[in-house]
Image (cartoon, rainbow, N blue to C red; front, top):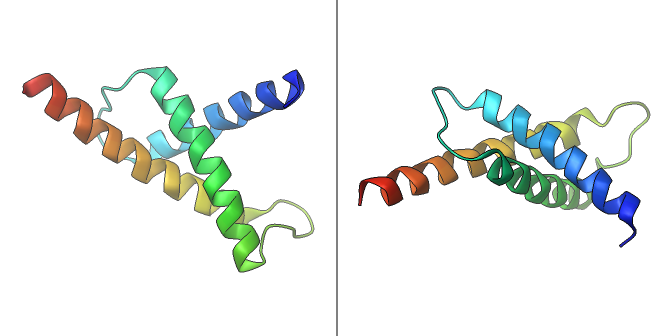
Length: 90
């Protein structure tokens, strides 16, 4: 993977992770690096799901793919918050 690909993945992961974090209500006590990692993973998995559904390439903005990615990021942020909360309590 080229350096530009890595930088693009980090930027997209940051955006998708931040959008996923905004969707989840309440305060999320997880570090920003974890949000970026969740966003990168959600973007990759969401793109694969969109390709599988045949909605990855559409004219203009791929809204369905973006919604899938943000939903996956929201699920990931929720899971990370639950794990971090349990880890700090126990």
